Amino acid sequence: MQPARTMKRYRSRTMINRFMLILTIGSTGVALIPLVLILSYVFQQGIGAWGVEFFTETYRPVTLGEGTVQVGGVLHAIVGTMIIVGVALLIAVPLGIMAGIYLAEYPGNRSSTIIRFCTDVLTAMPSIVVGVTAYILIVQRTQQFSALAGSIALVVLMVPIITRTTEEMLRLVPDASREAAVALGAPKWWTTLTVVIPMAFSGIVTGILLALARAAGETAPLLVTVLGNNNLAYSIFEPMQALPLLAYRYTEQPFTEMNDQAWGAALLLVVIVLITNISVRLATRKRLSR
Image (tube, rainbow, N blue to C red; front, side, top):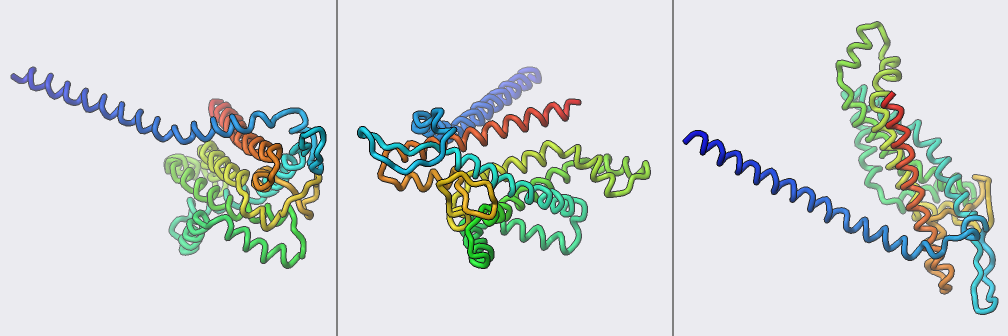
């Protein structure tokens, strides 16, 4: 009787295990369906706009010639996106990482509780609110739309993501690693810098990528801070074009060619984020395997 009962229990557990496996695989597939549909649709609509002119030329005034509309390329938007997001990264990464270190290493302080609460509020803050605030505090005071104003608005959106991710990753580092470094006579700041951060490096990079992905696709803050520019601009103190801003503006145009370029810009944004994620993850994997 005992072997039969054991075998029956084994079969029951096996069936439950298979059912849960199928359920999780099915749930994953359902979750991926919207992503696949969106990516495939953006690819179908945007790939036709890609070409040498799309990547190497800037905006040209719309002219009717032989029944076609000539609008140039989006080089100015590509350069603008790189500058705006790059400046935002230079400011947000050190601020977010240092704030995350403070929250993880000194969790019991009253200031840590306040900072954590403010970070959570900023994480859920609508981007248009951040953009309008940057417009009032920067654009109106300087009487000038600029890439710097847009970068600062993006910093406000990026810092909470980097901060919370850094905090959570540092908390996952075993206390034994910290204690071992302290036992060898290392001060707390040296332990954090040489032991804790390297062990959480992959997770911190993931947080930076999440912040980068959000910043690269934001349109609302740029509408009221950067304004846009049909020319190739390099100065952060003047209006500048960006890919999400260009995609939004071109969708409002009555010309099919400009609508196609909007889809092309959207596809380019997706590809940039995808390549960035893959490249950094490969680099992180090589670093951790050493």
